[in-house]
Image (cartoon, rainbow, N blue to C red):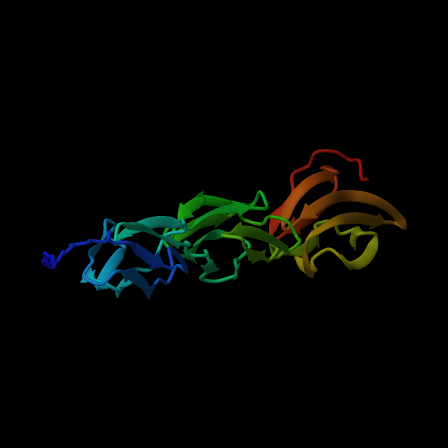
Length: 286
């Protein structure tokens, strides 16, 4: 009987390496941050991690064998646009998304007052880089001369026209979404002095302002002052001779300037505004 010889068999069995990562993506705010990705792999299975964008940096775990972790950091995003990048970890794609900054705006001052003569000034705008804005005037007497739009921080230059009216005024500009208020007073009316004299021995001159008697002047009294006025008024001079009153002159005076005069050149009466005598043009008084 033949006894069989025992035979030993040895087999080398290799299993393929498998990899997985967790998570496969991550979203960040504009400020950035650091985070970790876990790698799951069979024992002895090596792997690497790499990035290709400057704002994503692997700080540890750029390679390993078997299970491991990858630590990475994301830089802050100083623009208003969101961005997306990737890393390759153990042959898997890891996606990073990051939002842009939210624009905030402020202006250096919110109001300014000017004199009635007007002038020029500027307003500074402060905001983040890449944040656009505009500046517009809401009134024709306020004019933006430079800086009507910009991106990032900037300056708006503007001018204010003179106010020749007798009313103060308020206007606005809209700069980077903010309201800027301009105030301007009215022109102060010019004051003027009313005087009269009489060169006739027989007559007395009566002076009226806006239909109200203010005084009279006789021969030899010289120039008499009848008051100081501002704005527009109608001045009348009448001659009283032997009980008869007749008009000598009617003058419309506005802010010290003679607008229209009716003067009887044959009369001896005169009317002066700030010491300046009027010229004769008509004997009609109205």
